[in-house]
Length: 447
Image (cartoon, rainbow, N blue to C red; front, side, top):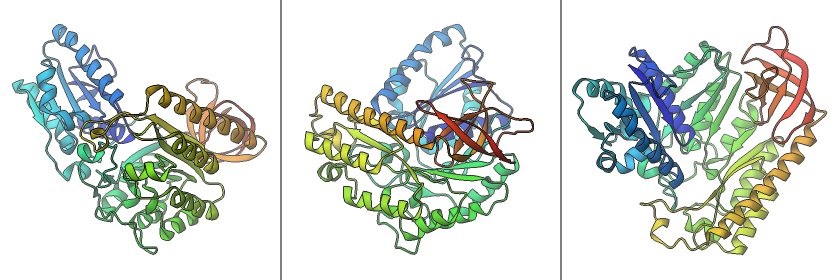
């Protein structure tokens, strides 16, 4: 069977799709990027933002004509939207064959094969801890340099705007031995960089406890140390941690282990305490800045990225100014800025979405302009220095050049040289800066 998988949403969805593709190929099926050749079309969906849901539903609805041309075609929806809407999707999309939620994704190969046999319509949105341990497969192109490993699943924070706890379930952590085994397998296949994934990776191993860990205790820090001991693994990244889980122990581990990249995605959401309280973000703006300062004190080169919501219900001009000022003080290297939209089923959706759309647009524009100015200044400041990148292969936009990323997440394009291989560490002298990337020449090489 030829299977087409379309992924919407976050890195967790991307990782789920990769694992499912690996599981399907192990069963003898073929993954295809052609909609017309597919015998089964699977849409891995997101519910975090309304736009992602509407985009997915529109695409799935359009697939009705494909089924008219190819009656045996199987069409399924998996992921967060499937978990949230379940049977409703089967009712509103009569050409849909199955709906599979986030808690049962590991059953997809069996489900797909059974539907091919009896053509029944199925909706399955139950919960199962096996989804975390049963999704260790990988499907990767040749010469892959990096891979993702899911170490936690679900979330217990219940931020008032967020649908994740309702569609991903309660927080669970994988056994460390299982994670390490997967990491060693990936490195044996040539992987040189691993990205650890979870809704709150820094809470790994804490059993869903909402309280920040005591200063000397961090199961996540322990896991990072064990991963760093794997020979052949060059770099470790992780996303996305809740700020208050950065205690002394975790900061010590990151600072002492050079394999852990000096680039942290640290969601802020707002720089205003009243807004943070309404969001149920259990820290203040001052506490957030203290955590950033503690990390920078040990690692001055640390780069930060973040998530911010503008136009949250009740956000005043003063609230927005506080957010903007904090973002400029921290000097984020990157930011994902979202205009608030209510998600049905969340606490904030029960209130009034009372910030006008035009105001949201203006606040979004101002933060993006600030970010662009910071990025340009930081890239220009790097010109003339030397840095190390992990070679990722030919650039998509400029195939005559190769591309790589620094430990702080900056993209650098450079001319290749004889003997270079994907996954090599290359020292570059930076010659000039573009709008979002740097350009350099080789100064040294380590395989």
